[in-house]
Picture 1 (cartoon, helix red, strand yellow):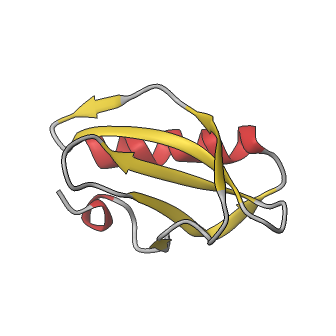
Picture 2 (cartoon, rainbow, N blue to C red):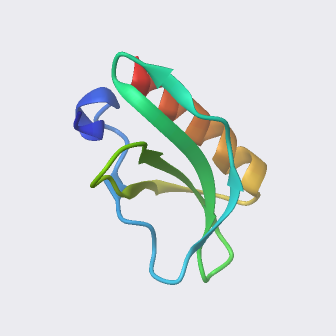
Length: 88
């Protein structure tokens, strides 16, 4: 499944920022659209982004780079929403 096809057009998806690290990982969200793991990713500048990765061979992490959050919990909350949309 193509993640971009499941999420509204206002969300820009890209690779995580260079040097970023996942600081919070949520529970797997599963549905007809696949299995998705939400996460909060911290960039080198201190901002947090919502990230997702699809469970399965050859999948990679994507990041909703259009919105930065000041704390990891907010970024994870948005990532959970995105994972739910992607799995639906």
